[in-house]
Length: 256
Picture 1 (tube, rainbow, N blue to C red):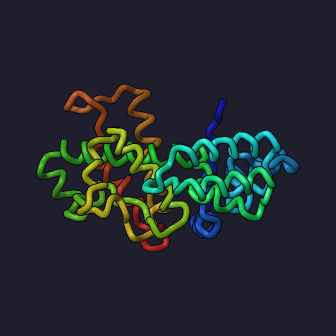
Picture 2 (cartoon, rainbow, N blue to C red):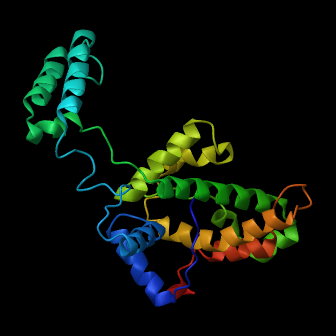
Picture 3 (tube, rainbow, N blue to C red):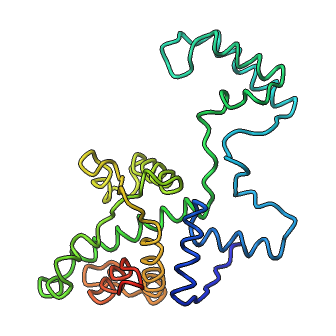
């Protein structure tokens, strides 16, 4: 069972913690979870956080080496050198590396294996996509006067801006978001993953922005679900005031 803990921070502390999370290539929520976990289980490693680069194991068991080496020898009989699996000679060499236990050469074997994204990180991506789906839909349900009151900037503010492909963590979140879109999920947002939008590459850091927006959006949305507050369209929608609160969270508190 997972329990949600809400913590209120002053703007200065929030800003400093966000900077620390960015420096570690993680989210503020994940940093807080790991830190609190370490307080109650100081001797227990967090299995959701990769050690080192997280891509290449420092060691493999004999059984693991035997199984993977066997797969490479099977591939050596199947590949023709034209695909991504290389040629037979390459596959035989990888098998021999494993059979002899040359750990320094494991990099070549695991070069394409990425570290895991934690449940909280993948969940964050889905929460962001949900939020922008509801923001766009709700904005479209407003009348002209409500849209005018929000201002022209709100038209773009309710649209998904992507993740920064040049940032280690955001780049991996973007790949996961693309994976979801390719599975025909969150179809409404598929347009932001086309070539015109550089397949969701924002070219600027967005994680802090989305986390601030979610802090405003989530309590509003949970309350609507609990109280069954259906809009005039017969579905759950945000009011103009609620949209305004969420999109204004894009602006850092220090700049308001």
